[in-house]
Length: 397
Ligand code: NAD
Image (cartoon, rainbow, N blue to C red; front, side, top):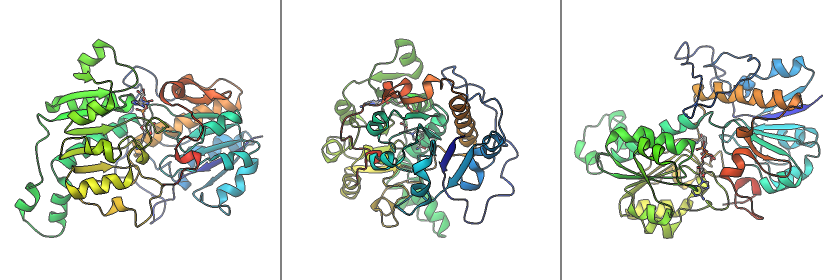
């Protein structure tokens, strides 16, 4: 029988909800590329309910315990005395979420002698040291596409929030004021601007598709150019060199995974090569950018705004400089864990577990690493290098 150790973010401060703002969520049956949403044999939860926090348990307890498996769910993930560290040595499966990541460093992997599968309940497995996982032949899987559109919607919202200066405008309303000039001295229309998406995969393409009706000039970068048909549908032009893209854009949206090629991609040099007054939106991973370079550029006016919902480490400390820098539209890491997204990644986690527990292959698009090497989606989107600078590799800011 397997032991499944699941790390989720804490319940709401006022307790697990007893009712919700809406009675149902729309039923999505397939993703934009035609692939199917998760297809577990059954689910034991009501879509639209809070599944991503500890009491929600991703809706897994009934299913696992009915088969005699052990499920441990905790939010206590930091330090040698944490529940996570105590339970890890005999866990067969670890489930973690990027929103509240249980960093699976090489050190922790070395202690997890029975670990065979690390599931990301969501997308993005940089919290796992992929080198160490490969050395120990641990399968790493995530629920590909489950929250890509959720994040793309957030990206578009933050582009508009920055360019139109929404957050300070809203603050004026909340504080009883009405000084319009103070707000509009930093507010523009998005129409006509040049927008570039770095790492135009599932999220990035969804961002391009959503921005097209705003009559902007769209560009993108990724490892391989998209087909001519798709480029025409999205109305976007390929720029292979990310430096060239950065220098031309009014707005840059960062969408690649975090790995050795993308770590601190937007550092002081790259930011200083951008147009003065450019904007950056980053809902992908905090360490795609240099934390302090962002703060400096916002203070000097080199950047007109920065928005994102990804930080390092997570949870971010109370004194993290991104909490108090000017011209920001930050959120805590939540873009990919709306109630809508949770229903999909909870179902996908169950689908992966069903396959693993029945000794059946996991869908290739869910795979990041398997059998000691990158696999499936991981082989297309990640690189592994010794000493890679990702949180999972134990890197400290
Ligand atoms: P994806 O695999 O579909 O797309 C990633 C794209 O990045 C691919 O097209 C790949 O070719 C490209 N890429 C990889 N390395 C690159 C490089 N060096 N330069 C340029 N492009 C590069 O994944 P996705 O669903 O679009 O998700 C992307 C990332 O977004 C995830 O890895 C994760 O870090 C992040 N994410 C964040 C949240 C959130 O809640 N904020 C949720 C989901 C995903």
